Length: 171
Image (cartoon, rainbow, N blue to C red; front, side, top):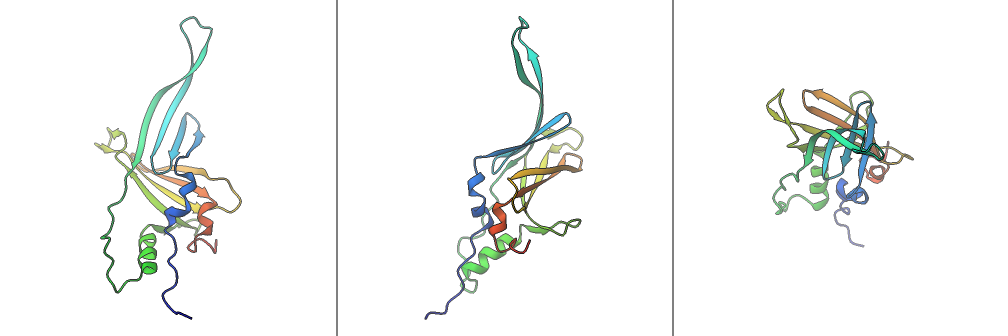
């Protein structure tokens, strides 16, 4: 029997690979929100319009704001110091992105989406934080959207996919 370091826990992102090319939608009053994992988060308004003859109805987007685009965070040096095992390195990377919701006490995994549509009120591009939580028995979906500061958003997203990761296993 060999006793070595425990097998490395796969990074959280690996648990979400099945939604990589998927977009999720939430309708809130005037706005439709679209979250495309590892792509973008946007809000838009669409209206039904009739063609010139008035016989055919079509849907047209009349307002459209990108609230953030995914950008790959810079990788830490690929050369991991020999004093750190691969398992410890993977856990450390995930821990930097893990948080706990102050209201619900539920853990979440955070991703930042930046460089959205220019915000005239702040003079900066819009940006968003997507907080992904484990939700047993529920389809992956946008739970809510908050504008926490002018042109800065927090998206609460639930998925069963994260529930398999050890960081969320107790939830």
